[in-house]
Image 1: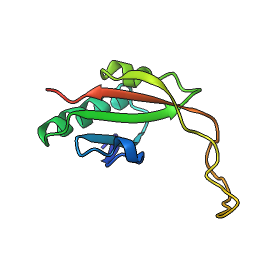
Image 2 (image 1 turned 90 degrees about the vertical axis):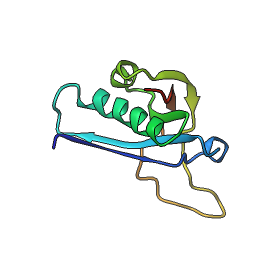
Image 3 (image 1 turned 60 degrees about the vertical axis):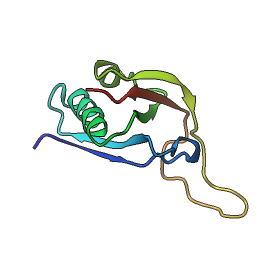
Length: 108
């Protein structure tokens, strides 16, 4: 095994329409081209299960080469920042910079 991907329901409520899945995590051991293979496999699996769209997010500083190779397109900036609020303070252990959203239609 050289890589793994986790796919689930979209975190953003407006994207959770029953026809969209989100690639939540992709991890590899550094073997070349595994990331783009996994992103493509996620699209094919989503298509086989009847979904119509895959979305995922990357940090604004990442190039997104694997996503573009797998047929995803950048649709713009999204989110980022802290989840901490006055009513529910949290310690931020994640990157706070902006993110880019990538989407791809699910098709064979």
